[in-house]
Length: 255
Image (cartoon, rainbow, N blue to C red):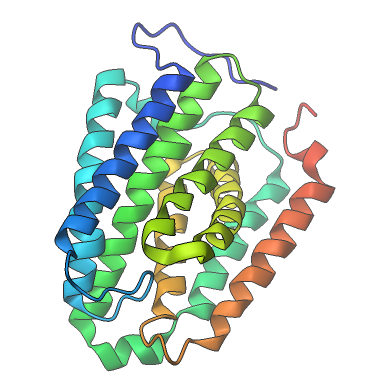
């Protein structure tokens, strides 16, 4: 069953959405590079409050302001945040498995060692990332593809591909290993899309994204001593994707 777009005067075309993604990346990556210029900063290794503020909170906050501005222009808040597409009940296993995994793999000893202020700021920072990226890709992106006549399968596919490709820009700070991140983020992007579909709420996808990043990044608090339980995240993602692949024709009640 495909989404039937309503008649809204402000329609975002796909190329407009891609341009928005590029603008978001320029803001986030550009501001992060500016604030960390001359500093020895390792990608994906949140070791201090200063790191979180310079690399995440300020750049992502500005990116969110841009995204909220576009969302306000579209004026489709309910359509952005609530999905009424029917879905099979078994798909609720996806968010349950995701939230359970985040609880298991979080590096609690490392967070405790760095103090409450650091742990809370890391949580706020990752929730900001979850809010901004989900509003952009699973909110505005999904809305743009649906309203331009894409089937739900193609909507999920293309927003997932673009989500993964966007993280390829991290090659600037992370080097060639960013290519591996593209694959992994594509997988997580698909899972976040399924969280949206299974719950019907963009907020659920935002929370899943933010908490997932929180648990994964907590494993890199001490880069020289990575938290071993984080490896479980890859196993869970693989199992979820296999489950969805096997039951892909049973996601929607209509087929």
